[in-house]
Amino acid sequence: MCGMERIATDTYSFADIRKGGFVYVDKTAIMKTLADGSIGKQFFVARPRRFGKSLAISTFQCLFEGRRELFRGLAIEPEWDWAKTYPVLKLDMGSCQAASVAELWKKINTMLKAESERVGVPLRADEPASGKFRFLMSDMIAAADREAKSKDPQARVDKVVLLVDEYDKPLLGHLGKDDVNEIRDALKEFYSVIKTCEGMQRFAFITGVSKFSKVSIFSDLNNLNEFSTDARVALLFGYTHEEVKVNFPESLAALGEKLGLDADATFAKLVKWYDGYRFHQDAPTVFNPVSVGKCLSSRQFDPYWFETGTPSFLLRMLERDPVLLDDIEVSQTSFSVYEPDRPAVMALLYQTGYLTIKEARQEGEERVYRLGCPNYEVRKAFNESLSVEFSHLDTFDHASLLNQMLSALRHDDVNDMLDALSCFFANIPANITVKREKYYQTLFYAVFVLIGARTHAECWTNRGRVDAVVETPCGIYVFEFKLNGTASAALAQIKEKGYHEKYLRDGRKVTLAGVAFDAEMRNLSDRQIEVAADAAR
Image (cartoon, rainbow, N blue to C red; front, side, top):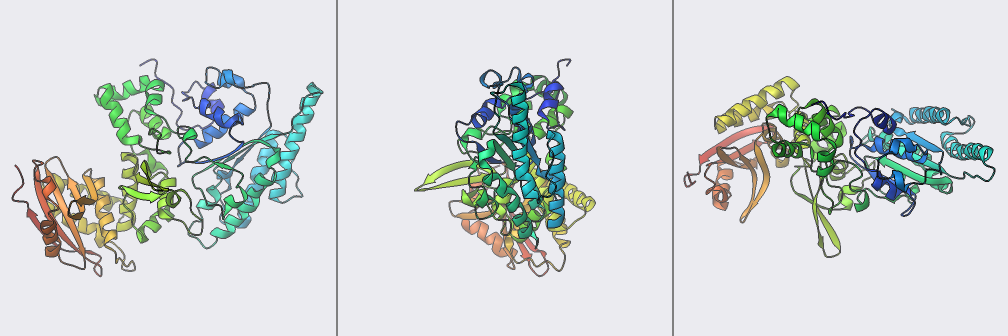
């Protein structure tokens, strides 16, 4: 395939992508909506990691610097006033992660010094960091104005463009720690300059993963247009189906050729693995751009999400309050904002990309959102992290037990499956008290998902809700759990409520399994297994 597209998977510089001949999926029509001033001038957009936020920051920088040659052939090129340029101040807060407030201020000062050297404007050394920030903006405007007047006495520059990447990165590492409010207050002081110097700014664009409510950092940034769930930018980050097909035809063909699949089957597999994110209820779904790029570049499906891992603090929260990534219904405020000292599991899962909007409906004056896991890649990454965290197994033992579970499932041996599953629970340390059935159910669900079984948790029937249903090509397994109860009571409940009846005409063997857990033992204590005699064969 001599015409194979060049795919950038490790650079987020717009200039490097355009100069290097790499594919750039054109988002500039949406960017113009923000940049032309018609709907505001200061914007905040939150997106999960690895969604191209840094590339968007770099693109805005080149746009306002007037680097027209980089935009040849893109949607914005004939629509933009290239004669008008602005000084651009770019703050990369990802470089400011620190273990303490003192170290944070030191890193912020270092970042400001590097940026002042890039723009060629001296930093005011006798000022605190917030003062350096404020004066750097005003001094950049003055320097740009002098330069413009040296070329044209009638020219005037009176505004700066402010770009802030990963504004929340210094804070995220402190969630759940005693010093989180100290870090928050330091950032609040620094970011307050954005509002007090609003008059200096032609345009401001701030990105991050998390959105904190207005009683915290955003209390001083209430001038921002919060566009994270705005329909106008729903497709700014991520790739639509059409964008993938139009921009990567040769790579898609090469991937299909390697897999021995036709074009439709290849794209369907790409959708299963990496698509599914929705940032507005009426918007189409989008692919994770980095994962798609890596897959098409390597011609191999892998869970590239693993490369960044699941935040350890999120896993600790989930250990205390387990959540299954299946059909969760919430109000918008319950998943869109939280406070650093009171982090909310649902909001963290949504903002980090483990949950996404599936649909929304109006109930009176309230809008109810249904959230779910976006795709197979994320589901695999989440359940891998969750099962390791919950079981406290090392990587080797974890993989070995998964293989044992898979073998038992293939041989339709429920007892062997449960024997292997009990090993996941056996390693839970004695100092962890597990008194909620949800803990066992979550680990059960995570393990079955990891071995590739189609697994449904808390499935509703017309007579109640069964704890779990596992489907394979040859069989359906209906599980009911009892914590500190009996397996016979669990099995009796399945039959009394008829949880299995909806599957009887499926044609596959239907197996009923009542499982008891002992909180003191922190493990399976009993099981009762029975094949549904009236299943259609």
